[in-house]
Length: 284
Image 1 (cartoon, rainbow, N blue to C red):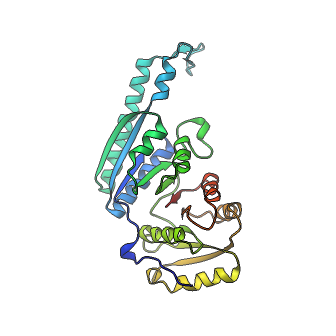
Image 2: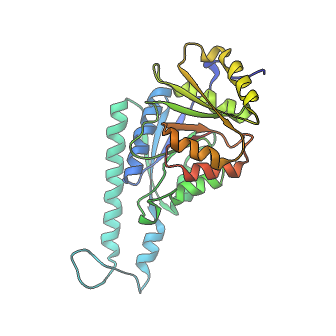
Image 3: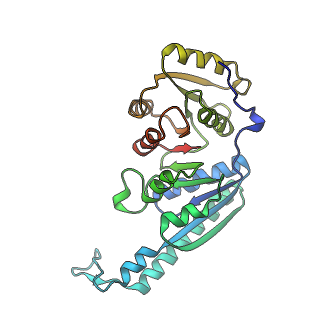
């Protein structure tokens, strides 16, 4: 089996990284990950905060009220107070970006815009650059599964896309790559090589039609120059469907998962996997 993994000097590198900020726990994890990667790849970092236009539209409706913790009766939404609250969140987001970027010694910029949040965030990330999002947002309805912005970015095929959650690091700990010998799998593996820190283990989950084919993949990969002097652990799994892969990943409880939706697995199965596992995912 002949592989065409690029040499380390020609692996994927992100030149500009955009991170969506909303002051939630998932957003803070995304900011830390984005800054880590910007430092590692010497990339520029842009933080974007979107003033949700739907909040202001809702506040303008005559029947819109809010119930505060310290009041017994519903009150009309104060649009002036809402404006102040949103501006305060933007300042907090910018302050966090300034602090984290300074700690990582990376160049950064900050943008505030008003609009529909998913559309504005996706439009802010130039093509071929990395967009970093929290798996969930501030809304209580999004605390399980993907938030609305992450779902839209995934559905629209925005790549590269990093979905983060608290408790993980994008550059520390082990990396898990789904590999089936396809062009997309090669890209995922070359990306992992770019991100991997010395001393950390690279886990390769080999997906094949048969165990013999999976062993042949392993033998070929062990001959690749870019994997020389790299701690690699090989795991074998039948190439059946995304649900089998999801169960294995949950049992493995690894760190960052790197994969492509241009693999032998159908794109729908890959996206379902991304939606279902509660781990950070880098889709390339």
